[in-house]
Length: 312
Image (cartoon, rainbow, N blue to C red; front, side, top):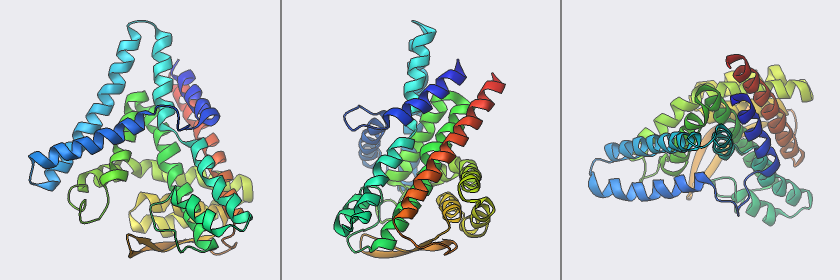
């Protein structure tokens, strides 16, 4: 039953993705985080403590909500329990959505429409995109795909195998917390510190699993497996940032150099160089990144199902 629910959740994500008209639990998490931030800031002067309490409340609430939904469904039917678990795990995955959001950038660049490409890439990255040229738009898209393979595919599958829907949903809550308050800005440098630490801890193993699966996909597609792992170890590991491990792996897999300077709120933020400049940063590299993303997700899902089946 657990193997079937995991397979169904993954296939549902491939088929449906994240249509905007469909109510999504992660949007509910975002609402809860915003309201929770207001509440803890009003009650606690110490920003680190306030932020830590918010992390605990949201993570515990996400786990409890998922566990409670499964318990309630189990009072009626094991099939209803399976359906609820499928829906919860599906909500944590974003394989198809990654492609849906990245292909428009590729198409705009292929059509030579740079303003549209800038607008499209602005929807999937946090950096300023108004002055990006074609190579920088390609770089931004490839980096986002690499990071999202980790936190939108590999990590949810990893935690779903370890602890089912409740643990996968807890992970998604922590990841959403980091994306909303884990910034090193004046507002969140202290308040979001525990959120960033928690997300980093939960993503450490998934980051290296992502590097392995991207290298595996790169080996199948282009014979670049060793290059991908070398980039992850050489360029990503020394930074101690999980996202750079994943981005380095995809850079090595598709044969480009990523990294450089990004601009956030008017400030230049340097990032490490990742990979090697074997191929140019042109639109086809976005297509390559999407292919690597899909294949690595297939491989990860296959391994997750095999582990779940053997454990069951």
